[in-house]
Amino acid sequence: MRLATELGIAAVEAYFPPARESARQALAQGRLDPDDVEDLGYREVPVATAEAPPEMALRAARTVLADAGWPGDGLGLIAHSWMYHQGHDVWSAPHYLASALGAERAQPIGVQQVCNGAVAALEVAATRIAADPAVDRALVTTADRFTPPAFDRWNADYSLVYGDSATAALVGPLDEGRDLFRLRALVTHSAPRLELLHRGELPFGPAPLWPDQRVDIRRAKKSYLSRHGLDAFTTTTREMVRAVVRDCLADAGLTADADRPAHVVLPRLGAKTLRQAWVPAIAEVTSAPTLSVGHRTGHLGPGDALAGIADLVDRLAPGESGLVLNAGAGFAYSGVLVTRLTARRTRPAAPTPADEAKEETR
Image (cartoon, rainbow, N blue to C red):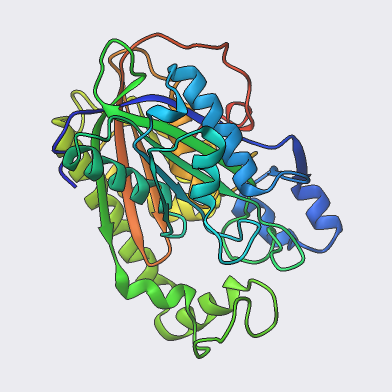
């Protein structure tokens, strides 16, 4: 989307619960195939043992508001995104956040676009800020807990393992003296021809977790691959990633090499997927170095995008830019390009799993 208003990100946070499950443990429990360990590249993932997803989102949101010095009652919009169960049925997690934050005048909305939800929520926030002068600041949050017995984070899917987390970002009209980042570009391209990849061949079910009371993304992917093969998916992914990177650079007024981003942050997918599809596609558009940060977090569902921006806080000097890439079932491919503005940080930087896993993939 073309940004109609200059926007800034005043603060951003990625929260990871302290408990961990390691790939070694998953192997010992028979939840991870030995042949998959190297292809996935994950060492461990954060696991929420006590906090529900909205409680983690509230923790991240409070940190962001404190860092930005912005009161909850000053929010005009709360856009919360998630992939999996939020703890109650027929219930609105965004309204829980608004109530707990004292955001009585904010409109709380839920944005569910599977793993691309945070970018979709940023697009909703950008559109609302441009259209409604009453919305001065918007809070974007995500949270997920991929918990048994219905969701086995290690083997529910191919090519990735899921980690628990919450993220938050405060977005508003650009204030170069206070904002951490200027939001330079926000781009999404869709490939709905890939929706079968997560639907499969089963008929539409009458209730959640039908027919066997567990999340089985592998079954749907097997159906797609048996019909179309892996090459169709890989080719589409490369095509979409090239388009997203190219359009983000163009919208931000950057060239592919002369003033390229300092980092291109990859989504927290499996290492083999990134090597085969994402990194080569990026290299066709820009020589900017790619950054993989998911080795100790796993894939965070919709949290990948905001966590990627949070990873840039201590990696970019003022004036440097970073491009965060993302994707989600459906399929949607997105990019968020930001430029670091101030050296301000309201609290000391604390080591996170992503910091410990810092590794440039090329």
